[in-house]
Length: 141
Image 1 (tube, rainbow, N blue to C red):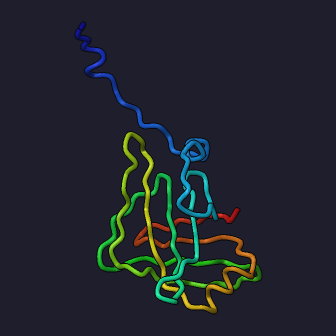
Image 2: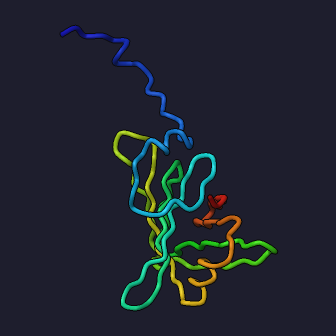
Image 3: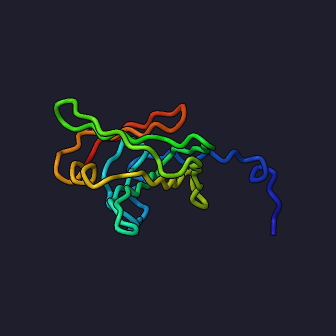
């Protein structure tokens, strides 16, 4: 086995996260709902104990670590109608997918029946995650 100094000091350039890279991931844990240049959001309305909640997963270059304040998610409907939801948990942390520069962030949001019906029936134009100091806009698919 030969030793190579060039391999030792070779720079490891991170791969750029883009939609082509994300499409190669075979994620089946939710419904693909919205995207931007480097993130995909999966959104599903689930039920626990007879009460609805919104399960979201962000996969892409967004990495956050939020303690004690949580985040919000805004649904922007046509004609400037906005629905704003608060996260169920106040601590949110992204996890890096092994061997990539891609992060996985799972966030649940409080939801009531009327809000769930509104999301299901009215066309959503965009969604906006407000993650502490980071705003992440995504266009629905």
